[in-house]
Image: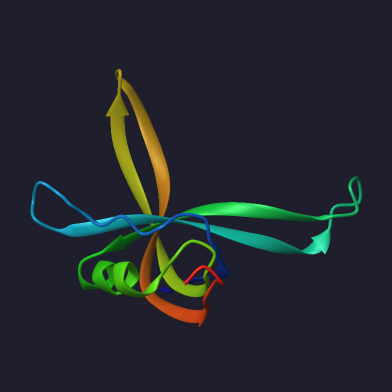
Length: 109
C-alpha cells in the first residue's frame, strides 16, 4: 500500500499555529498550484488551491520559516474523514503534510 502526494506551489496564507483541545499544534496552509497547461478557453494557466493540514513540530518550522508567497514542495498523504453535520454523513479527503521543502522565499521577507 502506498499513500503519497507531492505538491509544489506558492503559499496563499501565513502559517497560523493553533493548539487543539487535546494539546496538538496544528496549522492549515493554502497552496496555489498552477496547472502545467493552458486553458484552451482563456489561453491562460489555471491555478488550483489546496488546503494542507500540518501537525506537531512541523508547525513550528512553518511558523518560523514560511511566509505568504513562498514557493514550497510538500510531501503529504491523503486521509479520509467522516463526520455528521445536521444528521448528514459527510466524507472529506484531507491532505496532511509529512515533509515541507523550502524552494524559494517571497520578496516580502
